[in-house]
Image 1: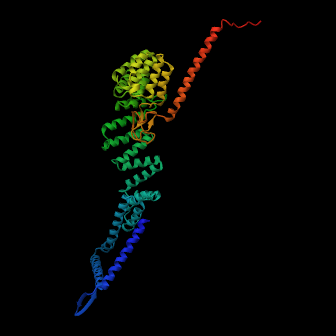
Image 2: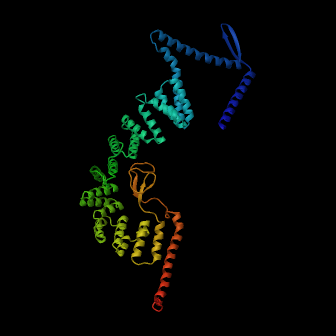
Length: 489
């Protein structure tokens, strides 16, 4: 609205200036004297300006007629395209100007203006390989997906623009949620341009979502060959894909190939915790306990993790609690100061009912880095050592509102996962999960914090009721011998 008003004001100002200038010229005395063939012509000031304008137009018209005459002479001399080039020259100039204006409008975010300029350029140039892409992108920006799809389909008919058309339709299908069609189009686009990094990443992500692990490994190899992926990252992601292909290794119907893929995943990336745990279980299922223990110790030295501890425990499922503590000392010696090592050893000693040793392993962890697991272990230690209910309840109350500790979190969107997965369930990113402490406030749940007084109060009431019952029973037991039950005949 303001822009239209401004244009009207500018137009009125220009008209007023022209009228004022014409009035000044009419009031100005003198003029221009021109002598032609002995005849003298005197022109006033306004007439002189008009004559100058007519002269400029006449010169321009003369040059145009001269160019047309030259083109006609070339045509008469055998150049059959001379006249067509003459007439097309002006159209091309207008078309390329419209194309440039459309690109500027597209870069400025003016979708409708870009679409109008694209239509004008298409009218003058008659070169769809140049204008269809501008039409498609301008239509997408303005929200006309149908027109954009038609433009992309026209691009498919020409070999030089086929890749652009396939990629454009692929992105449309992705925005519509049609991942199956988008996957097929991504495969076609990659066959046309194997070195296109964006298409490589899109295809890899879609194949991972569709659990096409063999195809994803092939795409990953293409990224390595084309130089768009470093070798160390390739080895890590290839291990992730091999691990994903062997996810059913513990099922009853697991094949030998799945077990071998789990072992291969651990070989490709020894520090990948899920791969190490799954490869160890594959060895255990084959009865190879020593290789399983060896690779678990190697991975524990790189990154201690609860899954590794569980797999290490499965090597000897029938051992006693004391024997398990002694065997786990192999892992503890590798990383004795790591938090996970201390938590695992504290748990094992609690099971073995060696509560002083469990406290020694836990040490200041419950104060330095408190989480639900460590605080719950402290409550168990206090209970095992005979502490009062009030002390145990205090530790449990802290555990209720404490953070959960390290978890599988996505590095892209920080979404928390219950277990490791190759693809983030929230943002669909590939290989972005890492074992870390989530960035959460000290009080993990406000509702849990409000429930604390109720829970603590209920426990205290229960304890007091137990004490009262004991006090009531003790006098009855003392009076029982003095008041025997009368026998009935």
